[in-house]
Length: 265
Ligand SMILES: [Zn+2]
View 1: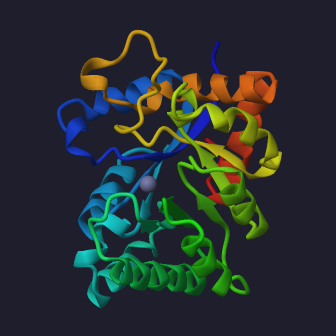
View 2: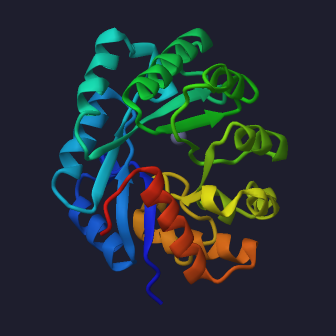
């Protein structure tokens, strides 16, 4: 069955897609992924994401500095993001946030450039595409300090526990769910938690090439995730919500279109 969906986060500028990117995008379209937002994680990858987004009507992108890249960030990088974000194809600031799981960047650097990107989003009135891993409650505290001016914001790839989810919902955040929920070891808790996300604040993403749904059969070559697997994630979330997949597809697509101000496909 054809379920029209929107993948709000795919790292299509990742080198693992360099040899067959066109085929990957075509497969996504055939799988019903009507629109797709390519994630920017550094100035270079955001420039590449924008270039890619300009090649197809249904592609969009974000521009931001991932916390793993924050060690190389500076004011010139923030200025470069600001220029990219003038393009209507660049629909959000991010991904940005905090990652205390892998300590690639010292915390003060992560926090400094996270705040700089929040301020950029406030200033431009563009939504925030947020990354938080093992950074609760510091991440929520920083957002709370900006709560008066915060634009629409989504906690992408939410994998946390109930308390963290509620903190984000209290901040008015939308929530992005990935194939993590398809992992019977690490993602089982999400089956109950997704029921607590208000219907109009739930969005879906693959985070490709990462987070290949563990229960996908057959497993793809080199276990590379791709946007064409979004319907598999959608069906898993629909089962957890005890909701028809068609209805969830419509709801999450409407949410994404409204959140990122996407045109109708
Ligand atoms: Zn992320």
